Length: 154
Image 1 (tube, rainbow, N blue to C red):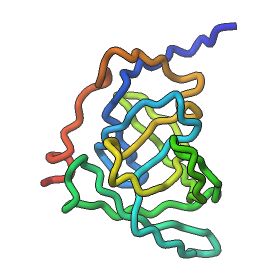
Image 2 (cartoon, rainbow, N blue to C red):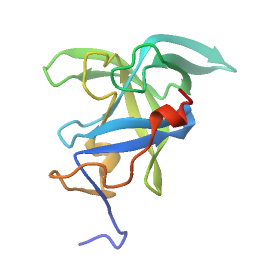
Image 3 (cartoon, rainbow, N blue to C red):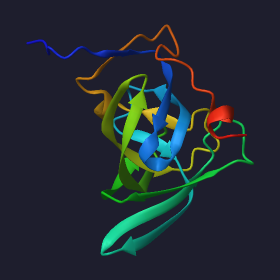
């Protein structure tokens, strides 16, 4: 049975926005091998507001730029043990944010971990793409280019 909803076609990497987190542009690797989407985060701190657990974290949203960071805040929806590609297990904060790719937007879950040594600040995992996208692995940026230096006013 085929869905009647048209699917968004993604290349192997795409520019995305996470407006709920104040991130108008971040380069994401489309990774169908990853179950959960992952977002770069460092200096994480948990706190509460009216009984709700919140995480504050910093992110370097621009690849190779370690001088610029954005402070983000999001409700914690879970703590999960997540295995990285090397099989190392780590407890991570899980948050939810709307993702914007081209003109399409929907809520996704993100695990937070330090990705300073990784090429991409974000991985878009298969749970976030289920029933929504088709991946065209030979191409990049099918949904437009975002200009982070302009959007972050650098």
